[in-house]
Every structure is written in C-alpha cells, then in structure tokens.
Length: 296
Image (spheres, rainbow, N blue to C red):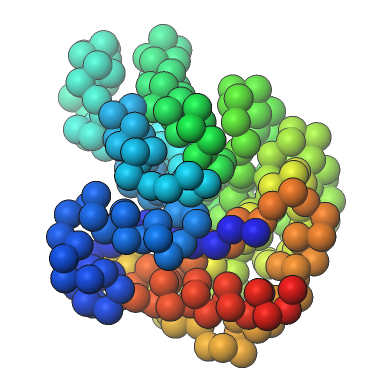
C-alpha cells in the first residue's frame, strides 16, 4: 500500500512553512524532501501541459529506489479544453492555420496526425519513469460532460489499447456510477484492465461520484478531494481553495476498513490526498498512513 499527495510544489504548501525545511528552496530539493517521507506522489502539472521527457529523467534521478509517480494525463486526452499556448512548439507548428489562432482546443478539433503526435509525446515522456520502475499509473480524470454513452465507452476501449502501463479512470459524475449503471461501468473497467478510482468528495453536485468501494484491476486507487461543499464547484477560485478541507481523525478512521478491504483483493492500493491547501494534504496523508499501519 502506497500513500502520498497530489503534488509537492503547491504554492500554499510551500508558503505554509510547516513541511519543507528552510534549506529546501528549489523544486528538486523539495522533491527530495518529499520522497524521504512519502513513497508516492501524483503529478498534477501534466494535466495542464504535456510532460517533458527531461523532467521525467530528473524525477527518476532525484528520488530513491521504489518511489512511485502517478501521472495525471494531459487534459486533451480526457476531453477537456486545453490552452493552445501551452502546447509544445512541435505541435503548434503543425496545427492547421484555422486552429492555430484559437485560444482553446479539444481533442476532437485536432486532425488525426496532430492528435497522434500529442499522444506519442506523452508516451515518450513517461518512458523514463516506466523504465526505472517508478511509474505507478496514468490517471485519466474525466469531466462531468464525459457521460455514460456509447461513444465514450468506445473512447475508453481505445484508451486501454494505447497504454503499455497501468491506467486509472476517475469519473466526475457523468452517470457512470449511478445505481442503474454502476455494475456495467465496473465490468467495463475490469474488462479493460483499468483501475477504478474511488473518490471521497462532496456529494450532490453534477460532478459528484459516490464513494463506491470497488477494484477493477490489480491496482486500486483512492483519492481524497475534501468535503468542502461551499467551494467544490465554485467558479473563479484556485484549485487550492476549491479543495480546502482538513479531514478530521474520525473521517479518516472511517476509511481504514474500506481501504484495507480493497488491499485484500489487489496487488497494491494507492491512497492520495488532493486536499492540497497549505499542509492539509501532507498532514492527512500521514495521519491516515498511521491509522492503516496500526490496523494491519
């Protein structure tokens, strides 16, 4: 069982001044400190921009043997709109003129050769991690408009065929885990060999997914987004503000049994805190790790 946080460079974590020593002033030094305490981290920056192979090589070099990175897939591949300005020059240079002037694009907007180039650049960047045994999985977190319909099922089936490494799928609503479709969704992911991501998050929103405890592959993933209903879908705020929530000891303890239940049926469980405001995520990750160890 591995545990950690969704990122190590969040500005509010650095500014909190409670986790990193004063001597850890660079991203490399902070990653080194983080990796001495946690065995797992999720890289969130790769959702906003395609990862670079050089960065992956540096992550490998700066972390100890056995440390694991989960990589959040580039938003283009999870049906989100992406900023054209954040695309690598190699992709921008081959965009048709009518697309190059747009501010944001979806995967469906790209000609197939351009889309294939983007896919290959993501795969190439992940290879150093995979070769070093430090790639845990690639997380595909889909938006609420990625609904449980035939064309999106087809997309998931194609997605599974693209990845030579483990993938994890997280739904943000979309009807995938409603009572009348839950069994089909889990069966689909199991058939594809993709890990179902179990979320802890506020309920009652378009983007809410119920915390169904299920595993669909050799890997199980649990992600904690906090329970701040006031900010969960609020517009115009930072991600840190959106997930600003410190779990109580009682709330974490409630998850010990379900997580241990998952661990009994899979090879490994990844437990990740995404309540990345200040030091909330690192505090809660350490708390939960202690609880899980005590229950072993």
